[in-house]
Image (tube, rainbow, N blue to C red; front, side, top):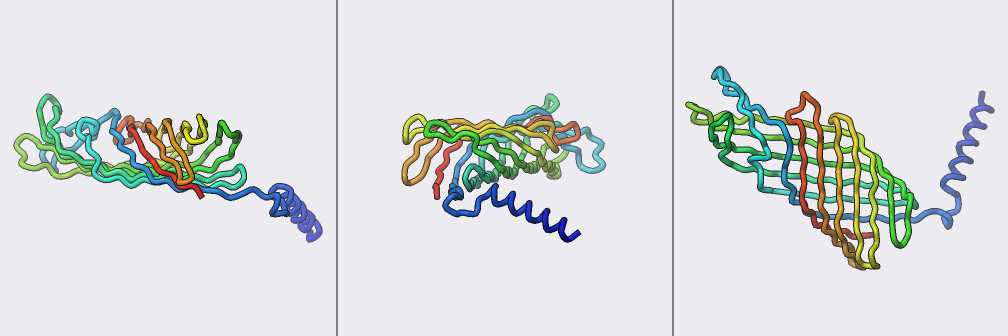
Length: 255
């Protein structure tokens, strides 16, 4: 038994040596980048937040469409981090969004004042492998997880009710994702970054599309992109579809 175990262990060591190499001169190099960006998305989707009445009122729920109310960004914290070794990479992207507004909208043929707040966390974690890397084009295959949580706080004026009690709606989504990312270099300074991924899990479908233009130098890169991030939710979710879309500007430092 011990001889068999030692042979198996030896084979594993040999395989590791062949895969990663024992000579540091032959090993790949580490590199990375850290980015801060500002994204100004608009909210779109289908489905309504069905706001129930105060306890015991006997009224029917009022359907509130968040995309009709939210149009201002109160706070945003966003960043990404990437590290590479040889052709392998790890990449993470995190965004926090806080939006709120008060607006009169038509609900069940009646104009009502709606006070709506939205708080969202998006975090994506990828592992990847560079399948193409030249002076002109880079292509990375990526796969990982995306977590998104959204919370709505809704207050609606009702007939014969001075103030409607605030209602909270929450949804947390975890999805597996796969896709491609990279850039096409137009010149030594100008380039076109791109990113596309999709996946499923707690949602029926989630996908993300990013594209734009960037300029790089010894001090880092600046990118102007358009980003669309969407979810198709399940029947028991608070909404049917939900998406965030808008322009983003980012600064990346390479190390």
